Length: 415
Image (cartoon, rainbow, N blue to C red; front, side, top):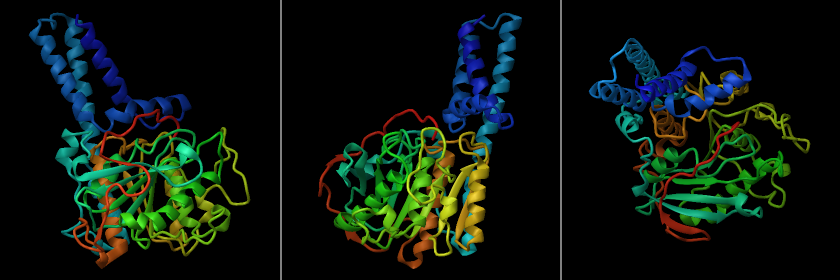
């Protein structure tokens, strides 16, 4: 009996089972569903290949010679079938995100709309397109040391043709890194002529709300001042964030020029053209070690107003960390206030679907491109091939330049 083969089938099968059963109510099972789905749910075909190779190896070595061994083979086939269910479910994502953009304007989805690169997503989970990008690392934007550092992603050609994306990582407001999630979006868009910024921010328990949006406002202020020399157009800035970062991005977008969130730089214009939330949390921060301070509501839902910029909200319907209902409620309030919003429900998606290059991640990046195309209209094209051309000097400012490296790692934890 090939016990190594049996163990592989059981481990992969358990991960698949958690992604196929109804979303559990038990907190421990929800955590297990999240952890088992980080890779398996986004790269199921790789695990199908692993099982196919393991099965072939077991046959070639003559290990399939008993009833339990044949039972393991049957179980492996069932697991592979489940993996293909996960794969086909993820392949519905492109239509979902295009439908979301079409809800803003049917003409926004057209022949030139961005289509996700499905085959590369299947073959290269860590292939972000670094060769087309120059990253200037660890630029200081505020007084909080390493928690107030940002990385700048620029087209290696030096020609900026697109808008600016400011991205914040997740981590439950207590962990995370500017080089973890969002790597595909940062590299893909910078390679197409955008200026992309990924920033660290202060974390709990040392820092509390409103420190997080204050830090993002400092990043916006940096982009509109020093960032101009790198090609930033102050009128074409989008905010984006994953999980906790989505909360911070939404809060900043909904509080343009709020003096309480701009201590010492109250006169700086911190308005932005739009905001993007990827599996974002949009509720209040009165839980765990979080202790909001000050008079402002800590929930973006309570900051919504009619003059808010457009939103793109993308969320998985199997998210066991931040439930799909939280995103749906936030979108409903935006629409009730008359705020333009594109809402994409990704079938079968868990939390952290932007950690690897996958079909869902590709679809999300395509949606960001088309969302920007809808906002800026004739001033840019979907593929970043026209618009406001600026030469981006490489290596200017504090920080150091490099031909880009791999994204960082860390404990996703409660995001």
